[in-house]
Figure 1 (tube, rainbow, N blue to C red):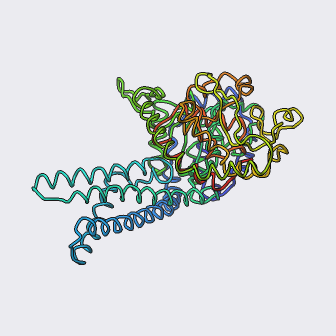
Figure 2 (cartoon, rainbow, N blue to C red):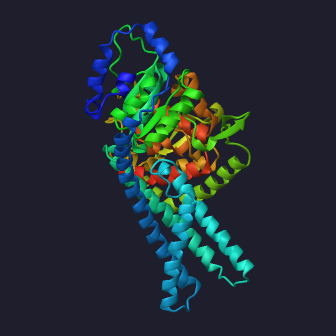
Figure 3 (spheres, rainbow, N blue to C red):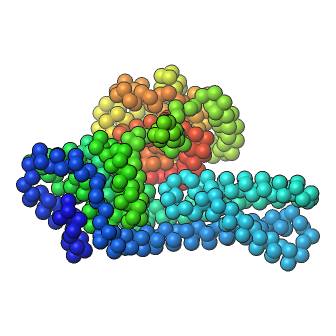
Length: 526
């Protein structure tokens, strides 16, 4: 360890693989390595000589893209607030002069950007990943309305009602839209390999691989794993050179050397029985000197942030996990909102539905609607409606077809010969599912939820998959906006289970907005 810490920056330019080759050439016995590891896990790893140049390089790189994103966010918020100030001034005070309107257009940006800064709307740790950016926009708009009410009441000012009624909705809608555009652009750059944070993973051999896989599955989150420091390896034989394509640097006690060598910006800790308490605290101290972020996995996959909170008990920060909630008042609110929205959608889609019905009738013989028994909440079956997209003997011809690879439970075929000409167009843009709005009105389905399953699919479920039947199936869902039929069964199941465990009204609204884009693209629909 001392040998590693004493290497200069010249050695630091060696690649991770070259280092691994050198590391594997060592002839330590397993027992000696384990004794050394137990004595010195993350102790004495702070090397001031190594901190300087590496920390400055990381800080400069991180400041480059974070500051650029923050500048774009401030610019977008300024545009939003100026536009809001002008519109609010014109509507609230129609008789105002151009000068007063200009003053309103200047005051509003100062209040909006200043309040957002105080409400953590520009913090680097939330950039492009956490929903805190969106929450900050909504919170700040509410705070400004409340502050305006208090000031007008305290000073006995006659503030027109048009100000909160116009300004708050505009700030929220335009502010969220601006952030969505910024995050979308950042996500595209991160998927192309830029604006990412070099990350070193520390943990046990059994937990590191799943953590790396989860990070690699979501490149838009901005973490790029460059090295892994893994415990539980047998140094008496060959040490694995990589895990999921990531070079294995060594043991966790060599983490700071890996941070310096790879100029890491983030250290992510997975489950490791040897890495807790004092050891984890020393790691945090060492990273603090290098200005490197530390993130610790709770080992809970599929649990969203709103369900997690810290409960301090006897000086220990315990992670409290809320139970999934889709009952009581929240369920009633979901059903009421969905029924209202569904009724409006049915009225708006009536002309489109009549046109589709006529096209189906002219294209091929058979009924316009297709009915099929599906399994709903708690295993109850119902008759699901769709516009017919296949020939009338589609079920009889099913046995002679071969499913596409990648999904062992749901039958999917990209070039299904049973699909009609009109049906192919309807499936591409999910127009065949419009009659399912009637199922939503009948209480058999929801607008958002897991995909409605066939009985034969349910019969093939493993125990974990049965949990997706706890809620009503949906007309759309995470599977619809994340790849549709291109997803494998494991990916579809993972998304459905995540939705069941982390449902919220905000999540439903996000999925509904994303559904429109997925449908217009037509990707993964066949």
